[in-house]
Length: 251
Image 1 (cartoon, helix red, strand yellow):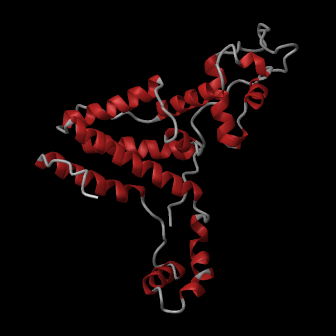
Image 2 (cartoon, one colour):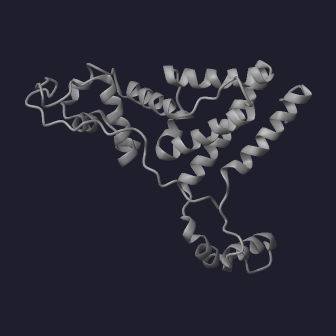
Image 3 (cartoon, one colour):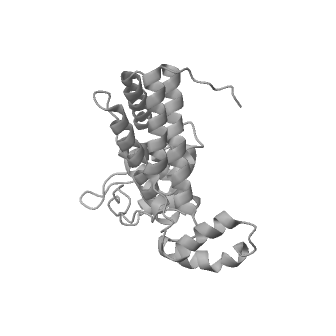
């Protein structure tokens, strides 16, 4: 079971609302509306995905959100793929960058926790972070700063590559589970009781024991993001300190 979700709202601001357009919707009426720009389009796309989900994002729906006709968007973005790439870069810009001039563990911990929080605020973003070739300027800064922090700490280029990917696998995996888990924190005890009959035969004694702890309130069932993160950081510190070679072929 997972921890309760962070209730804070997304950090991407809502663009100023625009009055309906008269023709193409792309003309600027001084004092009434800001001109359409690529930045406004991408901010509107992020807000739309935050509020309604990525599956509701279309160029036509995005145009309505911006108060323009769909064709007006193509003066600023080539297609939906460019919109998605730009959305990823806006989200990446919200994540705290690690620095290379201090405690690498603390820097990577802050980076991971920041990424987790940002991705919770934008529930659609983890899917795009893991499924696209993300090469926007903010993403490139994010990855380069991460590698720079690890290299300054003494990791080899190969070790640094494995290290940040291992940490990000934890970030993405935990975030996706937290976003998609079918129960809220306050429902855990009741859910344990509801499904206890499946564990009554004695065939699953350890699950029975854990469910009993949750059902009676002796364990809240909430998983801690930092629990797994600290295991990763501990292992990476041993690797760094001992200079141990990576063994990637033992499968």
